[in-house]
Length: 108
Image (tube, rainbow, N blue to C red; front, side, top):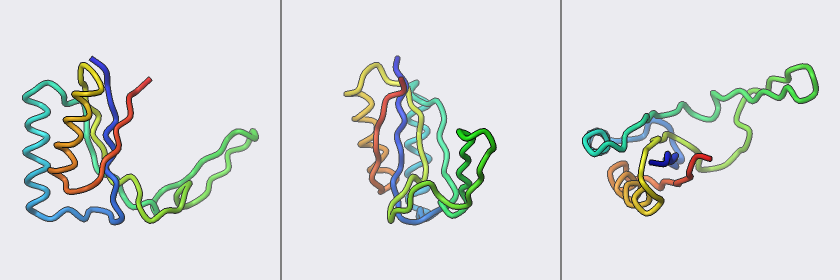
């Protein structure tokens, strides 16, 4: 089994409706029941981020996101799947359940 990051893309933080939250819970239950579940979570707004750069010897801390954009990573699933086709089918179901765009990337 390979692991995949399914990133949820949104332009707001914590924006799911009660109906969407129920659908996400049902999808999470499906992932667990089918053995695909590894971990999932939502993320705070990019404005809460701190970027740290220690490449120059002394750590430089900068408030705010590394990149500014209208859409950003709002949450994620880490799933296990036998191949990319299965991961893409699961991600399509996740997109439908959370009512957001998602991006799929395999772990190296």
